[in-house]
Length: 492
Image 1 (tube, rainbow, N blue to C red):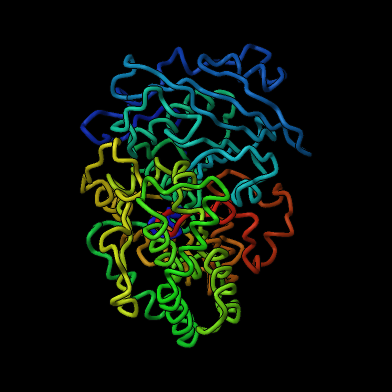
Image 2 (tube, rainbow, N blue to C red):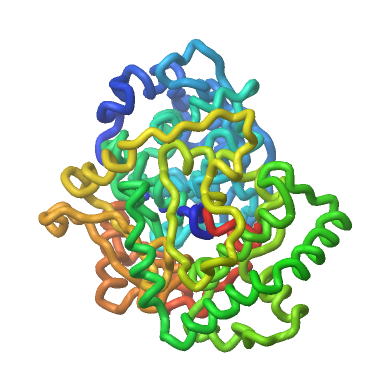
């Protein structure tokens, strides 16, 4: 989700259990469950058959490619899914996913980023490393190439996406019969949580990293409180000063921005102009700094009177000028559509920018989605998930970063959370890359022990990983695709 609206951002008990009632009143069994014929069964000698052959025996599976990776098999596949899980006969699409195969005798981690699929075979989620297991990574519906044609955008919602996961899980469970965990970070953490809400019996445990929880879309005072206290006062003051200076030098920088866009084939039809795009880029600035950086990096914030060259580079490094071009937005249209119809999007006050903003109301999801795609916000979806997490969830772990803006509105746990083995931990000083390895020692030990327990893995059988022995620092932007891809602040 935005780096703010945005970069919203990881892990089952009984096999074949019926899920809870989904939005619109359809039951999981009726609307989302894969027919028995689609689940697939291995032949008598299936445990010794090649894993690719076993997977291709499942109806609806297609092979895309295999990539080399040490110690694993890495397969990219597609699976035939209904466009509408409530009406499976009304069309299908091919949903892309990958399998990092270790062994059918190991637990499986079901990972989703909530966006498109990375086909880097070396990417293992933290829970996958902890349990030394398999990893199934699913591309979120409507992210290309996993988009129905024609695209009926009304079928892009959290229940349909959860039903995609449920149906793929049902298809793969006969092959990967050990425990399953769901995980994801940012929008992926949200996705893992929504999946658990609608299909609570699929997974043995869920690990959701830095997952925002915008229960009431119009109530965002938590973000104002966050920005009034994050980091130290000197850093906050300087960031605000530079953000204001960026708007005072607006005409000069926008001219340079437009020149860059022209030279690189970038356009601004969706947001309207380079000037409008620039206002969004600048509004991202403070949020994006805290999302991706640390208090120790405050020294990198330029002086208010720094040269325009220095200021321009800082804005590009932190917010990314590509984020609000048509080309930068296109890939993330599905996210912005969901933010503007169900997920909600953060807003925050910027009194230090008074008199400098030209486009009131532009900093919201409708501004980033082509106008030929209809959008109407449907309140209540997030409140439903929030109630379920507080009252009915179990075996769930939420990990947040103390200095991550997306952590300002976290998922809340019920009074009996400990009895239900639900946890919420904060990495001290952590940003949007926070994970279990960055927690304080006792919380790290508790979280790791629960992940192992949910996975059904004895500690002695866990492969040692140097990265799990000590906190990761500093946050490596190169490992976070949301940074590399210049996601706007509106995306978690």
